[in-house]
Length: 67
Image 1 (cartoon, rainbow, N blue to C red):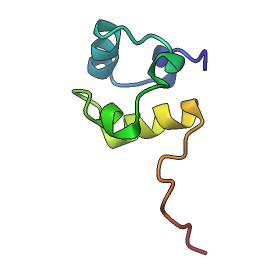
Image 2: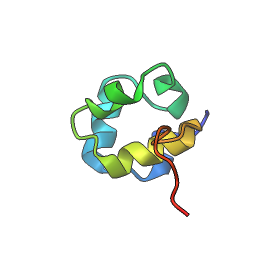
Image 3: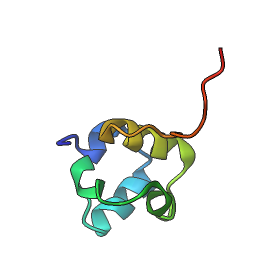
């Protein structure tokens, strides 16, 4: 959980928003549910998937994988 948000290569506007709210590493956002993460201004699906992967969360836990 010590992965820095800057290392995830997020968009600069989103990275700036995260730093303003006090989030510098992925572990700082561990307590937030996925719905709250998506409500952060500037957070898009691609950036959210990068952050979820770094947290060790499955981005879509209820979706069954097709074969």
